[in-house]
Figure: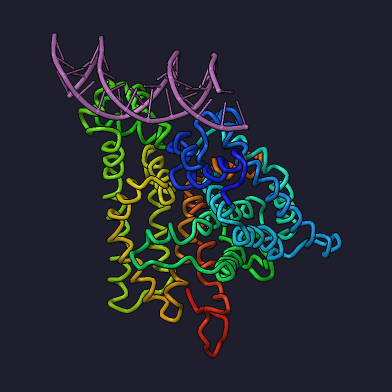
Length: 227
Length: 227
DNA sequence: GTCTATATCGGGATAGAC
DNA sequence: GTCTATCCCGATATAGAC
């Protein structure tokens, strides 16, 4: 099992350590020690620490993006050009995410948690990279959501999506973070349970009536008419 | 206005810079330069970088905790010993938070955004500190929520609270982070609007039906009966 | 491709004059 | 309380033998 080649071992170790300590606090020495590789190997294979981080994201992100787009393609194909229903969009995005986390090997789970924190990561270098990698996914899902919620102001839809991303970040961080809430060790639930409780929470949030100032007058005032 | 004493200027500068670059990436040299103070001043006044971070949190957190507890005291007093309604608990906690962010000076806003990210901050030192500072607030609000939702399994309530904290983190991060979602610069809305749209989202999430496996059999199956 | 050894830099911290 | 100068460490990165 540790018979992977050096770059792979380094990437695996880096994922785990970046997750545990953050990017800045994780040193190449820690990574190469954990990976049972030589200190110089990082520079040889990845050209430096930033190159390593970029490779780390690239290794996982291409596939994850493909999952997201495939999920959206699938429901859109089934809808045959008609606007999706909001819960379909949520399921395609967040359901895919949660399910993907569950399927992943340990390294993959570490990566997903890393990803959740990265959205707010202040490092300019990382943010630029992320924005570039995500551009297509963001564009497609925004469009799908706007079509699915034609009556809701675009601004309100974006804010709710934003809130949901925050919730997703914590959902992925899982029980570790949750235990800040109390000493009673909540176990990391099985993935199905997390998926179910997270999706029902999201549906509720998206279905919620818009605040008065944003709600358009309709026959049923103060209902978004969502999922 | 820059006629504050040195420790205050250092704290202000540190808040801004930690927010912008994270804890690790922000150096004492950056901080003291920005604060127009001497490099040695940080060690003199705070005993080191960790001491500075701790002082930073202490300066704001005591007051914030007091706000949270006062808000809860107020509704609990009004309820006269009866269980609160769920939306009252949410309003006390999240409403207070959002409103506090709005009232704050610029430094306060930086701090609140810092706080949002700190919940998932991997640094052991910071997490230990936060857990200690928050203990009382967490205990009180958990108890209030459990009382307000007697039919919902405690585990489910905690998970939803966890999700909400994630959403709050992103809500506080505001439009800066949101703009990763697209080039169309969404302006940071006025605080009232943010409060309204965030609270309605949260209500929706908390009111959502529990997932089947967690819902207790009642006469109206699959409804949490919340807010 | 992998190692040892080392260069170079920038971090936090401190001593001691003022 | 504030400054200058400096220490010491550990970081990334590289040179060059194997």
